[in-house]
Structure formats: structure tokens, C-alpha cells
Picture 1 (cartoon, rainbow, N blue to C red):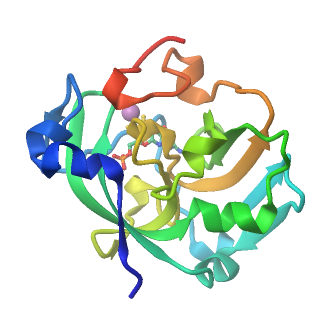
Picture 2: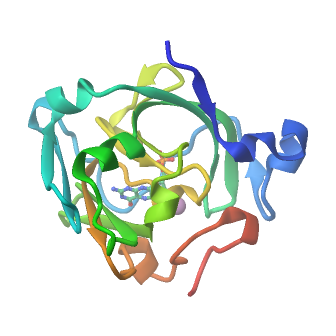
Length: 206
Ligand SMILES: Nc1nc2c(c(=O)[nH]1)N[C@H]1C(S)=C(S)[C@@H](COP(=O)(O)O)O[C@H]1N2
Ligand SMILES: [Mo]
């Protein structure tokens, strides 16, 4: 078993719940479900992940290839922009660094657009800086607290970016696009923040 990577925000203020809770957030033990539109039902056999854009080597991984990559466990806190936080989640999956190492971003690549299956429209997107996406606690997760993700939480694979608000992790993720300029994704077009740092309450606007 690999060691668990602990997201640095879990250690704020000695790890006490109050000091780990960003301003304007309330703790919950439940895990609410939030997204725009319906819940796509995606069989692993029909899922694939494409890494493209400003990369040395564009790649598409089917489920078998993805599942064969080394896994990591990450302990992190979830902060939703709608004011709930859930502490001490254990996500298991493939580190974003592992995926980026396969495709090798070009020097011009500065931002990432995550693409995801969504219903009714086909492409949910969310944008973030490449540095933030490549942090060591970021992953494409298949499991939460030891159990496979349910469809409504993003099965078979979802993005997890622990240090930003939770919408920066696309459920039902199918693509990682590397770009040179920041481009607003779905919620960002609708007024959410381009970065979304919960500690600075970057909820809306840019
Ligand atoms: N594909 C997709 N992913 C998405 C969204 C969405 O609408 N579509 N919403 C985001 C938002 S706003 C939040 S708060 C989280 C919620 O994840 P959860 O339902 O697992 O709590 O998913 C994010 N990922
Ligand atoms: Mo959200």
C-alpha cells in the first residue's frame, strides 16, 4: 500500500476542525450531490480519458490502461462553494502528475480545462492553472472512503483538486486539455471565480 498523501489544508491550525474550515463554510458529515443536469451512467468499458492540447504527446487512455497506472490515496477536505465543507475524505485514484508525465505539457501550457460527460449538453468544463492541477494532492479519483464512486458522485472517474472549491473537480471526467490562456468553464461562464481559492472566498466574479 502506498502512503496516504495528506492535503496540506488538513493540517491547518494543527488539524483542528475549526481551523480547517474556510470562512463562510459550515461542516457537514453527509456528502451532498450537486451538479448541473442529469446523471450520466457510464460503463468503465465505454469510458476513456483524452489528454490533449499543448502536450508533447496526445494520449487517450481507455479504462484498462487508466486502471493499470499506479494509484494514490489522498486525504483531503471538500469545500463546496454553496457553503458546506466535509472534512477527512479519502480519495483513491491516479495522481494528476502521473497523467501529465505521460503526455508532457509543453512550456507554453499554463492552464488546464477539464472536460466531462454531462447531460443534456455533452461537455461540462472547468478551468484552473496548470500549477494548481499538478499539485501533489490532485488526482483523478475512482474511489471515496474505500468504495467505488457512485454515478451521482462522478463514476467511473472524477477530478479532485483539494485546495480549490469542489467545482474545480469535474465528475464523469473524460478529457484534460492543456492551454496557454485561461478560458472560463461551465460554472465560470455563469459567474463563478476563475481560480476559486476557498481560503480567500473566491466564490464569484473575476
Ligand atoms: N460534470 C460535472 N462535474 C461537476 C459539476 C457539474 O455540473 N458537472 N458540478 C461541480 C460542482 S458545482 C460541485 S459542488 C461538485 C459536487 O460534487 P458532488 O456531487 O460529488 O458533491 O461537482 C462539480 N463537478
Ligand atoms: Mo458547486
